[in-house]
Length: 303
Image (cartoon, rainbow, N blue to C red; front, side, top):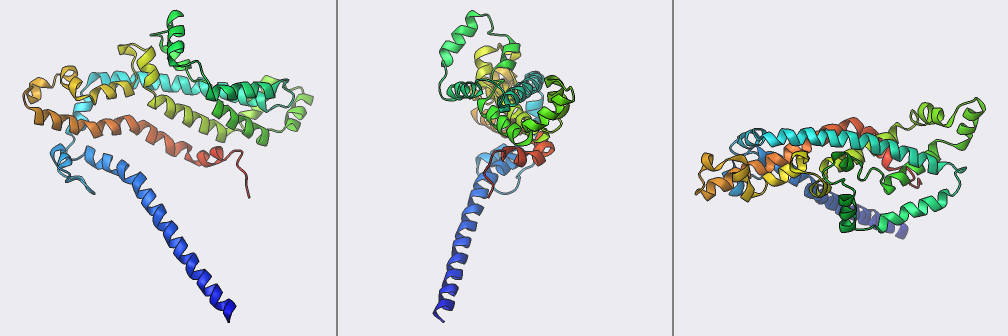
């Protein structure tokens, strides 16, 4: 009888705990999702109602004025072109180099691989610093060179570790030995066997590098000139209220003395700019999401 009561109490306490955990998870989900949802509905709403706090759950005063102002700005298209070029080039180069590095470090026959790995891990925590790096590249004449911008960050130690772990788990040494017995060279083995067996890690590397390069703006601000700037830097300039009227010639359209109208014009563009800059990445993710969990869980301890 006592054991039955104890079981009932335990079941009741488990239900209470499950309810608390569920409530916390729902709150965390709302805290993560609602800001994204608000940006979307605010981009289609009347800016005066957004400023007044009348946009909460649904768009209010539907308008596309913000998107129209953003898309009429010629530098937006220049930034898109530059960013697509930088992102595609950087993603291809970085993914290929990381795959090569991870494959080499996964082979036990590589001499000194532990020392190489320790040296690479050291660079994750210690670097030369921003100012010495900038001065060095400036003396070498690389400032203003878009090819340098594409190569910066081509090897991420974190991604190399993930790739090495994946290769150790999925490309055993016995497979390579069998291929070598049949006369397969190392290059042919990598291209014909390793790459076809690694779609998950290729997808996750491409996603990491593409998203990182698409959102990158600080290195571009340091090493590129105005006509070479990617989209993020151009959008950053648009969001500056002080530079909006001078760069887009909006003084004549809204009146230079009308501060309220200028504020509303900026507000109508603010959320549209966020959507415009994030849309390509959001379109990319569904195509690689089936590989995302598999790739990110490489090396995890399974119970």
